Image (tube, rainbow, N blue to C red; front, side):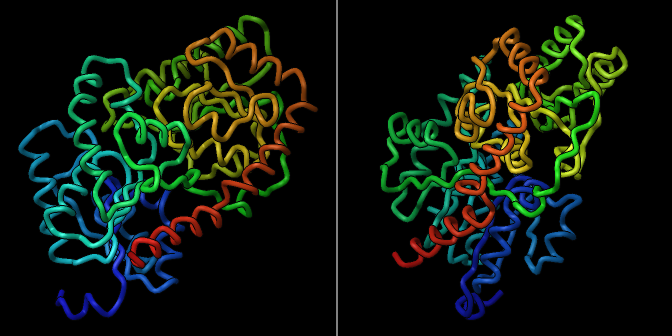
Length: 384
């Protein structure tokens, strides 16, 4: 690509570890940027969603070295070098890093390649900050100074999805308040989730996420077991696939065993969430993962489904306790089961909470709001 051609249009380059994550979480923003005159590139690990990216008129760029679970120091250095080369070749007007590893590695590369404007999208502080495991604590000691370097660059703005993460970045890492922007989640298509509710019978209690331990899969199964032993009539459903790139992934064999033992139903990965939510009575997510704002909870609220979740950062951003759901102390399986049972016994309360959730999403979490706020951040950076 010639330098002259790069000057003709504003170039927006997303850096995301997985192509499926870009399609599921960033596609509306990329479309809006394209329609606003940006030439859009997506640097990612190429998988099954490459054709979808091309069909949108975006240019996918395959990343050879970056992996979410990568631990080999030589491969990690190669990831940074690959990004430096990519930035110097494509000369983006703005580079938009999404999630922890692209933020840290991409920011180092952007500094070396003299990228003009950087958006660092911290979509939750994730496993490294939420886990109590020894490995996570060691990683945290390494990541904090690197994250500080990445986020404190003069030409960078940082997007966070919840106020708890904003406080951690400001107070714990030293990012200036005027460099932090709050954009609540990835947005949701309100039309897609506007179907008339038709709860199934017996009622479905749904946990939809990647099947990793810190999403609360085991606590959900324990709560379901308690409620079944108390003769609570409901179907407890896990919808989602294992995530081999995550060290906390639950194996397919374990999930199949849950299903065969009758503890829960495991449906695997599903793309028709709006239809599933229409039939669900309750969405439950006992996560301790360090979420930005879980997309599944935004979709649940948009679909007028009451929520039961742990009182942790991100979840408390979308759930107001007693209004559109119930916030339960993290790790308290007994309280989790009680909250589910109470809502199962009260269809009218479920209806009221669902309606309040929909109003909240319309006011603060819609796709249109998220897209508008993000494009405003791009314009702010370019103006500088």
